[in-house]
Structures are given as structure tokens and as C-alpha cells.
Length: 111
Image (cartoon, rainbow, N blue to C red; front, top):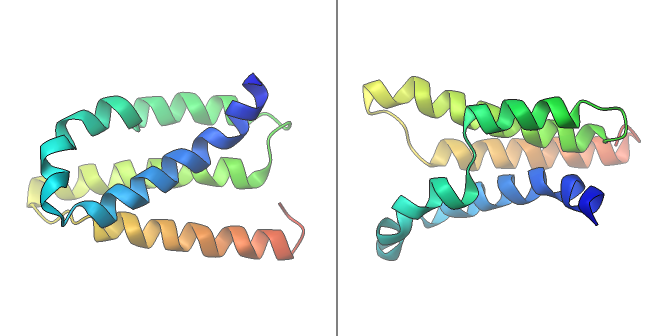
């Protein structure tokens, strides 16, 4: 059961991040925004710890790529915050690139 949770957690985190990026333009989103970092918890520190866990050969490349995607989301967000240039569309782009990459991995048997 725990291994299954480890297997799917990065995928769930990327999916939730993509969904919240899409929802960020809706009015109700802003009222729950304060709760999102604590409930989803995708910080650079969390992701670096996850990366250490998922670097094990028992996890597939797709799982590792999801963790790398979460780190990229964090870095882009932190780099652009001082310039007030961050937009949730960047998370959407990262999720789309991730999905394309996962499809390519699946069809090239590098999964």
C-alpha cells in the first residue's frame, strides 16, 4: 500500500498543480489559495526530499520526471516572483510538456 502511494504521489502533485493553475482565474480559487501550499505542499525542499526517494532504481523514469517537473515549477515561480511576472500559465505549460514527454516515454518503452 505504501509503495503504491509512493508510486502515484508525484503524478497526483503535478495533476493538482495543473488543475489549480487552470482554476486560478476563477473567483472561488482566491478564497482557498491560502490553504493550497499546506495541503499540496510542493515546495523545493519537499521536492528535493522526494527526488532523493524516487532516484532509487525501483521507481520508473516517469515518476522521477514528475518530481523534476515539480522542481521546475518551483524554480520558475521563485525566479519570476520579484518581477511580478509569474503567471499560472507557466505551470500549465510545464504540465503539457510533462504529458507529452510521458507519452513519448511510454511509446519508446523508456517508461
